[in-house]
Every structure is written in structure tokens, then in C-alpha cells.
Length: 316
Image (tube, rainbow, N blue to C red; front, side):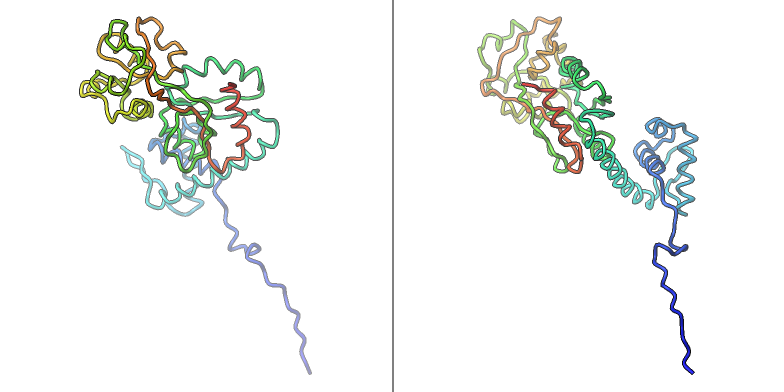
């Protein structure tokens, strides 16, 4: 006699209780990334707006969840284990993806509303923002702007790690992973004491500056490279290399003290960087300039908002 069999439907992989593992939360991954960046529990907690005990507990929960040690803790330092470094790299990708999802939803609603984290380099921020922020607030009252001033390389790193949404900086700058939008030209001018021989010139050439005591910002400021390119110089004079400024204000004071001459962007001059000095400015014969623009992640869903922001910052 033939026997009949009832076939049971096979369980899918998703239905298997063995395969249903708990996944890390975004908060836990953010804690891990912050610790990898700061190598200090207190500073990492501050960056995450959390208490140190909360961050530490979150990381312990993450390690327990994954069944692996990600952080090497000693009395003197905090290090990532090799596995921890690999997890941090992937955690950054996950956090960027989550930011892009939030941006996509935000961009579908009211433009330039809610939080927007803007990074600005220090040779732009104090001279442009006081002039344009009042109009930005009037035009977009629901926008909550969070500003971060830093050097270009660090801003782009924060942008890549989804700690910033967009950055206002000087171009050109090598940033292949970013999309950029050029907004305005910012010409360079020579700044020198009124009695300096170059003050008698209508325009100044690169040859005039080759033998001058040209003072520039220290390494790390993109303005240094842009200024040298504007006057077609490979480097300032030896004396100029020995005296480096940490800010445009410092450069101006050194020039006012008779230590040399410098190149300044017109944006800074219009913003009052020479106020309180007797320095005069002269244009460069070649009309050298830096370009001001915005940079954002290519994957960002807020591109239209950033273009709108650019038109608001530079309406002309």
C-alpha cells in the first residue's frame, strides 16, 4: 500500500532563529567612532553629547552584542583592536548612510529648515558670516545653523565622516570624493606700510615680491598656497619663511610692525582686517584670486539646498 507524505514548507533564512542576531544601534556605532577619533572616553562622550558612563556602557553593550573586544583599555591610553579598527571603518559607512537617509527626507520638505551643520575655514568665517547671517536668518527662520570653523583638511574629513553637511572653503582644493560649487572670486591684494617702496606702485607683480619679505600663514592654511599661486611664486623669501602667521589678524599686525609685506584676500580687507592700522593695499598685476565655494558629499540628498545656500551667501 502506497504511503503518502505531507511536505512541510522549508524555513527561509530570515525565519531561522539561529540566524536572527541583534544588530548594533546607530548610537553604539557613533560612540565607537567617536572613541576611535578622540582616543579618550571623556572627549568622545563630549563629542556625542553623552556622559562618560553612558558612552562606556554603550560600548560594553556593543562588545557583548558582537562577542568581540573592540577597544583596548589601559590606564594611560585607549586603543582600537585590529578588529575594532575594521568595525570603525564600516561603522563610518553605516553612519554616513543613515545621515543620507535623514537628508533625503529633510530635503523633501521645506528647504533650508531644521539643522544644517556648516564648516567654514578661518580665512572666510569672520569676514563673511557677520555680513550674510542676518539675511539668512530673515529668509529662512526655521533654519538652525550649526557652525564649525577649522582648516580645510579637517573640515573635509568631518564632511566625509558625516559630522558636517556642507563646507564653505577656498578652491581649488583636491577633494575627489566631494562635489563642489564655485560661488565667487576673491582677488588677492598686497598689504604693506604706506612708506614701503611697493606702496608707490599702482600694481604689484610676482617679480616685485620675489625679493620682498613676504609673510604668509603657516603650513596647513590653504590660503598660503593660493597666495603663492596668485603671484606665481614657489615660496616666499627666506625671511618670509622664518616668520609665519597663525591667522590673518596676526599677519596684519606683523606687517604693521615693519616685519614685511603680505597678501590678503579682498574679502578680509572688506571685512575690516586692516582696521586700526596704517597699512595700504595694492592690486596684483595678474589679478590673482582664490575661488570661494561649497563642498558636500556626492551622496548627499541636499544638493539643491546647498545651491540655495550658496546663492544666499553670495547673491551677486
